[in-house]
Image (cartoon, rainbow, N blue to C red; front, side, top):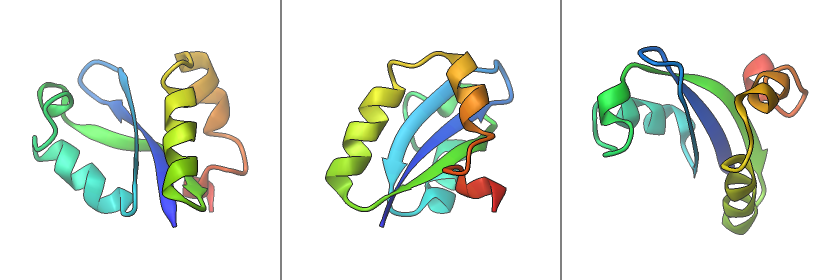
Length: 86
């Protein structure tokens, strides 16, 4: 199983979208400065997590999310696809 996730920076409110097999470990990596793009905007929180059956599906979904605006992310967090609600 793969996961598509959205992180929110607590320092500037920006969003980061990605995919992974382990979203908890990936969050730790982002907050530890192991990702070049997110290192300067720590701390990050998990804002949205969605399951995808394959890596290909996760990549496609991540690319779609990268074109979306913050209003959509706010709406998305309240949807049943957000496994953080469970």
